[in-house]
Amino acid sequence: MNSANGTALINVLATGLANRTFLISGGSRGIGENVALELARIGASVAIAGRNGLAVEEAVGRLRAQSLAPDRILGITADVASAADIERMVHSAHSHFGALDVLVNCAGINIRTPALEVTESEWDSVMNVNLRGAFFTSQAFARALGANGMGKIINVSSRYGHVGSPTRVAYCSSKGGLELMTKTLAVEWAPRILVNSVCPTFIETGLTQSLLAQPETRRSLLDRIPMHRFGTLGDVTGAILYLASGWSNMVTGTAMMVDGGWTAS
Ligand SMILES: NC(=O)c1ccc[n+]([C@@H]2O[C@H](COP(=O)([O-])OP(=O)(O)OC[C@H]3O[C@@H](n4cnc5c(N)ncnc54)[C@H](OP(=O)(O)O)[C@@H]3O)[C@@H](O)[C@H]2O)c1
Image (tube, rainbow, N blue to C red):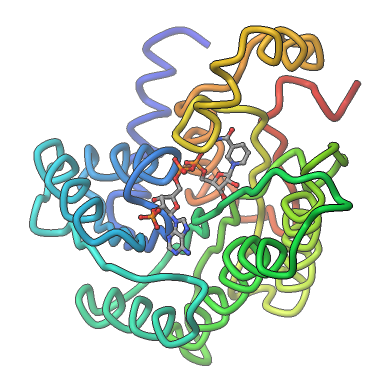
């Protein structure tokens, strides 16, 4: 593609997205914030949510500073492990903007423990955020759209939703569940609500910082990735924006691997 075509494509993509209203759970840092940032730059309406109110406020400040429509950026303090918080989060975003078009379920945590040592509380924390939280947020979003509303849901899953890995039994189970939740909601809610997942490999964010700081681990992980590099925030954001845009209106129930070929090998 030459650069003129590339620019035209980006403009068309941006035009479709700029008119839309987004709710991004886990939008206060990492992947979720990067998605919010790209949307803010084209003037889209974006609500971000996270548990830490100060972090949400600071992220809102960074987004507004780069936004074409700063008054269309909203921050919500909410914990997706709580059904009451989910209700409030979705209701606040919907009533603030008067509409919601796209939900990005990005809030996620990982606790790495050998399977023999996983406690009830560790298992529940991971499941409650990564799977239960994503489900009840999707349900609240679908209810907010009403009987005839159209929308899109993008679940930020993982290549660990497709392959197992030692010490990650709760995380892999939660993301594997998220993959089938994606397919089930896609089937049940078609054609009004399109539901897809994005499955990144390692991306350097707060979630992976300490792991990827270990040179030996870095090397062995890179050996698993045919592209021989970790993903960037832009790699994941690109996939999410495609699934949010009108270019993917026949795409539902799929998992888009952004894993440099990890699960293909
Ligand atoms: N980074 C990677 O290598 C990678 C790879 C594959 C998949 N993923 C997935 O990508 C998503 C984002 O990961 P990331 O790397 O961007 O992580 P991150 O930098 O740690 O950001 C996580 C975000 O989720 C929010 N969050 C966590 N628990 C929450 C809860 N209970 N309720 C509401 N918000 C919550 C955090 O804010 P608070 O802490 O303030 O709540 C933060 O905004 C996750 O679902 C993760 O599993 C990441």
